[in-house]
Image 1 (cartoon, helix red, strand yellow):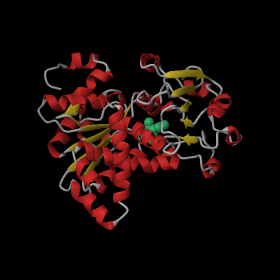
Image 2 (cartoon, helix red, strand yellow):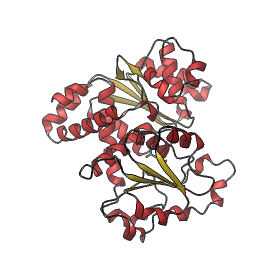
Image 3 (cartoon, rainbow, N blue to C red):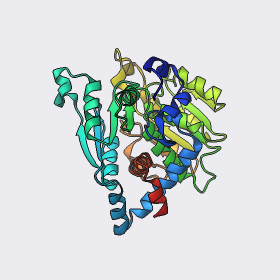
Length: 349
Ligand code: NCD
């Protein structure tokens, strides 16, 4: 991020920013899905699978724990999180990294009026990696930029930035799709439905950005009026020649697809209780849909769920959201290993 000022940087397109998130030809910051290409996605999936295998034996567990011993990570999560926080923490532990955390600004000096920039700058004095979840879009990016400016480039991983992006969730979703379709021709050519609050759901946005890397995919955006996919992303997909359709009827789309990606309504972003006026039950996966869903299709959800998928559906072998949760841990181990340049040690193990 040398030789560029913040204003100019901000105006760049995602694809143009990606070189600034690299260091010495390696991925350094993880900020947005547009920074990843197919080669990277294939590598991360392979690495996650390799790590999973290694960790099955005691010797392997010890080997993984020795890789980054003495390194420290800061988990700065100032927006609610269960899975992302825990899986990052466990991923660090698997690699021998020690973690510190701030989960509430009321327990840090931000309450005394310290700026968020100064807070994060403080972390960079103590740790080798910063993972952050923040309600503001673009916050992780601004911090990554700032750390270079002050000459303390510490890798920053965006673990969710407002309504905008959640790139590590998208990586685990790709890994889940990759594993599910391993024996069915891979992700290329698959039809995927995204259901629910597509306007404010950052997991969907980040995953859609990644899917441009696969050939012949077709996307169905199924959402209530007013919560359809944002114009910015639709424009991007059209430019990238990714085929998509928009609709409101879930039942119509279910029989057509290989994967259904359900989401909850993101009412924490409501400005005037607008979510209450929407009949979201039309965007629930009813039990009857199991009969019309293809036998090899999968049902995904980033979780937490709030009734979009009734608990009885968990029994169906096509319901794979709990596997997504587990995959999240392996993908985050792989990602951290790659950032810290330990991927070769792992592949050669
Ligand atoms: C998602 C998020 O935080 O965006 N949760 C997650 O990280 N798995 C989805 C959500 O909150 O709806």
